[in-house]
Length: 340
Image (cartoon, rainbow, N blue to C red; front, side, top):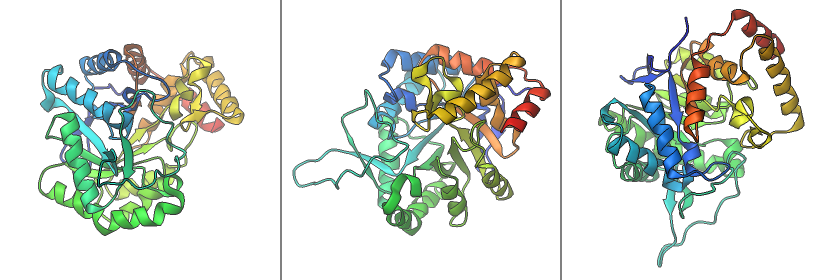
């Protein structure tokens, strides 16, 4: 049975539902290239009109800009903000140095941070402590202009992101950060929390530390990268919902030109390009766009609650919707699975 973008799907024990397709707001911060506010708002408008009601942002996206744009749309243009399910992230604070306050040295760029082309003029400071996560929640409410945030994802916690700083950041999270999130949930200020990461190991370890509701796993359960398969089985056994993000693997599975052939937020290496070309050729034999197979692939796993896609234009939104609702024959899935 074909899934429609507006179909509602329950999030574990959190008492809320996500639309099967959600819209991620990273591009609104200037990911890869600048984006005009008018284009971002038009993309949001198109998604809303199509029935999409889950919107995911983060302080990191444009160093605050994406949350500002999302909040403006939901407050001023949506017509009924109460229909929206909003997720954003904690773990980074937006800061500027001032007299009497020195910021910590800027950490090395992590491999999943490609920078922002027209972000705001702040500096990010990682903080996964109790106080840091509480402040991050308050700051996001201010930027969104909305008190109601449904889901909080701990952003980019993990060894790949933090390298030699991982043990310290993980200790901050387990020593107080998770407690802050539990308190917010118990007080009814959020419906649930989890991790928003590109690393399966981080979610696996977090499930052993606290009761997660929902996690956003980016890029690790896709046509190109199925390394999240084992994690999904564990999440399902723990009643932890998984939102599949990064289903185009940073763009290469939906690329329309060479500039969009990104993989894990960087220019795709030759071996990835060759694999994608082989997958595209298989899809072409069935007259199915590669992007359609990419956006629908995660929904074949019962552990996946919904899929999250990014967009920088109206056309990006409508294309993802068309791909998500396109009929795909079982024979194509069999060939793609055999080629994995």
